[in-house]
Image (cartoon, rainbow, N blue to C red; front, side, top):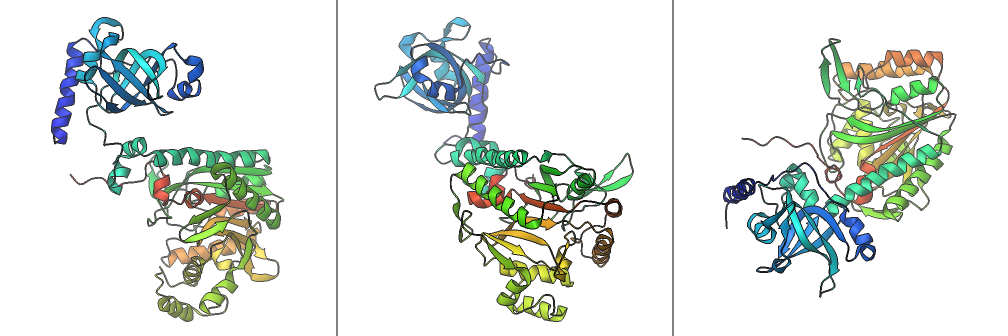
Length: 491
């Protein structure tokens, strides 16, 4: 078997042969008249008519006087047939023996253009009888065999263009993902939400608790951070500005670890609705999830991460404090830090920092993995919800919920805190945690507090990310990213 270097050298020789014949192996224009999907959909109408189609050579069969070639243009695959007796020519060069030239210089992976008439073979295969062809792009490296594809995960992600070319399932997932986000967008637009764009570079990263990526703005001589939420504090400013409903779908960045559910760069959606209460918000969120499931996947029942769930069923309500107490025996509102730390060690749960907030969150995450859902997690302690309104019946808790599916958080909502005094006190507590070394605590935003002093209406806010799509598709999150971050290869 030839080495990659030998195969490359052989193809470079074929490229040179084309150039010596006065042929440009990389013309800038295609004369294509139809996409391959159009040909398939309108075969009877186009039958026996001369058309021009283009695509990448994916397979080739036959020898001698007839060749069967499959081409792919991103919309469909289609068979073309080259027969020596047809006196095939090269485009715009009737003196060139097109059949012999094709055998001499064409390889799997090349992009070609062919002219001919549609017909049906003896084996009832829809095909095109080629009368002329030309090279559109001469490939220098061979693509992997389409049956075996790329099996090594690192190689698949590093050469994602080949993985998506050869793996129908991997390629199709991104059509579904596009429909996923378009369904979200259409749902919100129909409910009179305004789509907005908010800053991705921030002086303070508000709206979530995560370690940010940081850089320096040279012109302003200012340290800035890539956002960790989809403009939560900015969209709330828009509520104060008089916009009743806004949403944004955009990229966020978190300088954290990687797992089947976590990456450092991903797409999130957040929406905010003035004068909407949390109960109405629950109904809207459930309707959105069901619509996504039906429109994108055609069903509401799924299996993923060892759990089964049906989004069309009744959604349970789970009390944050009560569930932790039930599963671990710890009351996170009453137990002291020593009891919480001992319980986490007993459960073999790794956790960063020994402050009460981190240990409370770690206990909950231990419990969460046992819940299939769909469920609304409610009544979060104020300590872990610095942007939510205080619960009207218990000042230690807040008005918020998380959507729990397959043991994970797949959405978070708040009855947004609009009391400037309360918000400042919570920011002060987050700032204390930051100074004590908790680099995931929320940065205080004093200008946001100033906005609240002018007044923000009662507001419901909700958001989720592409993790939701990964769960419905039953894929690790890196699989539903076109180009996940990769470490450079060592030379």
